[in-house]
Image 1 (cartoon, rainbow, N blue to C red):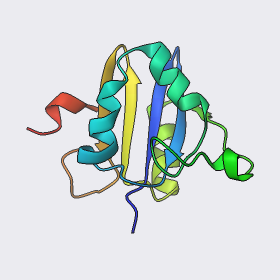
Image 2: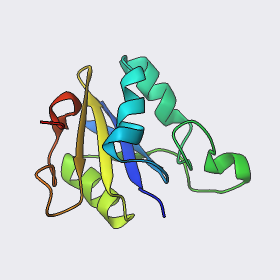
Image 3: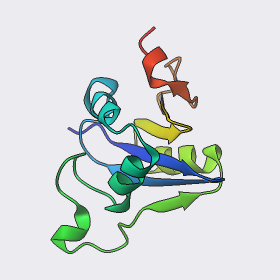
Image 4: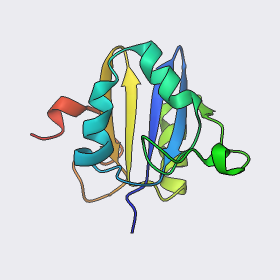
Length: 121
């Protein structure tokens, strides 16, 4: 079983994001993303496209197509894409801060952008 999700970065009015198949829960990918602290580092991370996990397994490296980062014009579009891909968690880097949320309707993080540092409260 996998905990799927999206990782995105705000670039102007666009959210550029990729799908990540494994370990997207707060203690997994959420924790690991804290190592990416600049806009440039996050954009570089996103540039490699969809992947199996945060640190390995780019889908393009195994010959898959249509796995480039996707652009969304709003948070709602980003959320719907995550939810529609069976993503359970999402992360967005905006203005130097990591935000997170979930597609689980029963969670207080449902369809929200909560600073990652506050998601544990």
